[in-house]
Image (cartoon, rainbow, N blue to C red; front, top):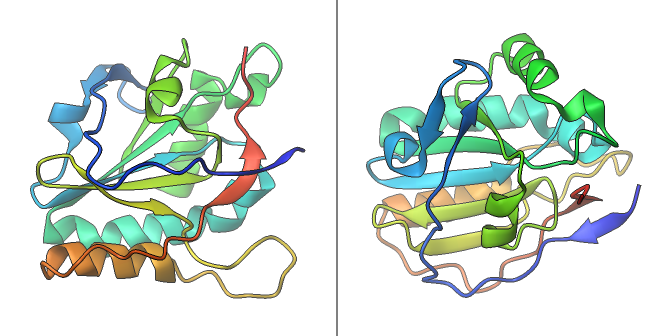
Length: 184
């Protein structure tokens, strides 16, 4: 496991569009179809990373807490399934069902979407406003596997609340940290 931080992005960056396989429905879904009315969280995750496993329950809770406030949630796995078959579409579908993901879990087979977002790690969190302009790119919270800090989603929740309340963008954004994306 290579410990990797998320790459910085400029606030205001437009979210790159995509059309990917939704492993839970079996249909392709686009960013335009899945985006939220008031904002959209895009998460690069996977099935096997201990950092993602550590936050899975909080991701479900977070999405359920904000979906009725017009925030859309989209999870994307971009890992190379030749080296990490457990991150393939069939396993993604099973995992999403087991966790009761209230969001689409998309498969980025070509890794083009991860590259377009300059995603680096799992988990990697992005928040976009209603016009799909970046307002946050950072950690979920300060909890990590083994550090005894409770997972609350505090940092991402604060960013979403700021967005919903038309407050200024949080300027001090701590990068996410986790396993590197498994590139081809």
